[in-house]
Length: 252
Ligand code: PGA
Image (cartoon, rainbow, N blue to C red; front, side, top):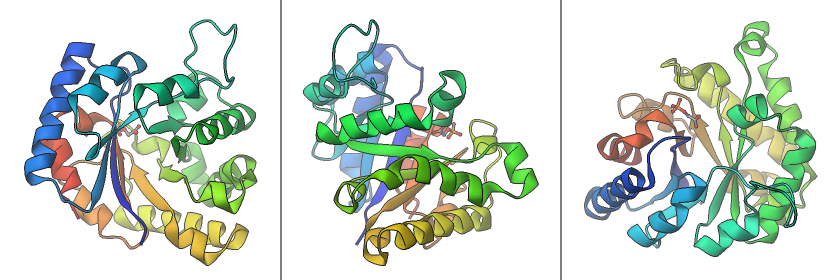
């Protein structure tokens, strides 16, 4: 059975102190009221990871970086390696978020290096894919998203591929208040799962958690998560409020 996952992506928000308070609040709510069969992850800025790992019960609330370096170590000023992330006690790395692809020029070549280093260091990549509005309007979103997968994670062995979490995030729905309809989400999630089955096997496809991201909130999460191929969410804005985040965790 594939896992249900709700992962927060705090992006470039909160001071360390605010982040620790938020993490503690989530930790407490999840311990008391969180659906037990949902894997909960907090994607924090690099500066917060160690403090957040210390502030939560990591057996219940996992911690994620939002990026890592494309090189293992060395003279790369300002970069944070996958090994460094691992040494904090974090277990996940969000990779290929559309904001990183768009604003920081992350190409498939760069992402291939990051995915490989993340896996080498025993971390779980939360690999993001998704199309912009012009592609959706042209009706070519399926080909676009499958091509993103083909250029990156479809290069992995089946054994490594099974370690991934995938997040489908239509760019036009991120931070815009516009959510994909439940049909649009299910359709793309199924297309992704079918492509995985064709590339690897149905067994591999059935094991991979595919999360939806883009203006998910407690009010629309139940409908989104009711889809057979939607296995949870990657949550931006609503992950910055512990109560809202809990509402999404409990949306199944
Ligand atoms: P949002 O962000 O929930 O604020 O739309 C989702 C994401 O970018 O991961």
